[in-house]
Every structure is written in structure tokens, then in C-alpha cells.
Image (cartoon, rainbow, N blue to C red):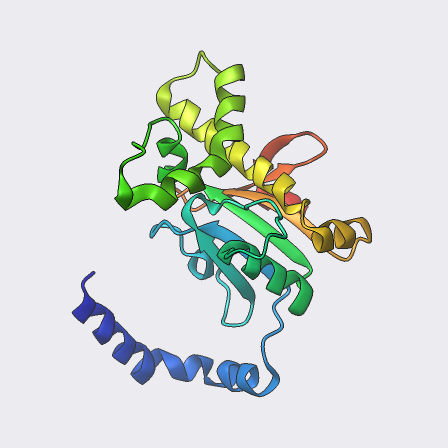
Length: 215
């Protein structure tokens, strides 16, 4: 989709679809946003949170980055875009749920198995950012050497979600609210090829079909 198509798409939205959401937007403008969910997903263009969750404007506060990674808490007063979004959702919006949603065919997780040269100035920040996935990669390499390359990537995608959940608990406010049971954190895995979602069962330590959690 090119730029002209995006512009035309906005005109189509404004002239036809916007009216379906006009009341919602008016309420959100007058009363402000109060989403109950922080959705942390990947920047991958194939993963569209509002589409796959059938949600409306105001339902979710959405953070997307490369690999749906969660940087651990650091009070170093540096620039931390993802951490700032997490803190805002938890401490200002007071969300009740945080979802870390990984997905199939993740380019970030696949990139964990290749090297970016130190002198590649075009990917200097990507190289550093991918360090957030190394624990998942190392876990898979230490435990699943008999798998095919594609199976290793899938294991890494799911394992990474678990490690990102652990990183969430390094944030003092998240840890406190989880312990007080005013906040829940969830690990999900979205399959691009069929639209289904799995969730991480912390008791059984494995992923299960999300639809089964409704029973």
C-alpha cells in the first residue's frame, strides 16, 4: 500500500466509516481515555491489534515495538520509549491487564540467530535492542537442539513472551500491583496464518488455546 492509497483510505474512513464511531470518539474526547488493557505487540505490519481483537477506539492502550520486547526497568533518566509507555499505562491510566503478545514468523526472533556487524551504522539500535531476546534464544538452544530451524524460531517466539513477562515484573509499580492483585499480566501468542491466539498458562508453564480460557 502506497502513500496515495493511505490518503485515500483516510478519506474513505472519514466519509463513510467515521460515523459508526462518532459517538465513541465524542465520549473519548469529552471524558478522556480509560482503557483497561495495555497491549504490547510487535511492530510487524501483519499484526494489527485492533483488527485481531475486534476492539474499538479507547479499548486498548497499544505499545508496538520490534519483537514485542519489554526492556527491564532502569531508573537512569535516559530515553526509554517503551518503558515510558508501560509506566504511563500502569501509573496514569491504571490499566487492569497487560498483554504481551508474540506472534508467528517474527522477524526479530529469527534475527536472534544471525549477527549484525558492529560497523553497520544503519542497524546500530536494532543490534542493541535484540539483546532483549537473547535469553529466549539461549534457552531454546540449550534445550531444543533436535528441532528444525522453523521449530526453533517458533519455540523462541513463545519463550520470548515468557521472558518479557519476567521483565515486566522488574517495574516496581507493576510488581506492587500484581502482588496486590489490582493488575494482571498475560502472555499471548498470535498465529498469523490462522488468526488464533494461545495464552501462557503460568501454572502448567505451557501455551494453550485462548478460547479454552473462557470455559
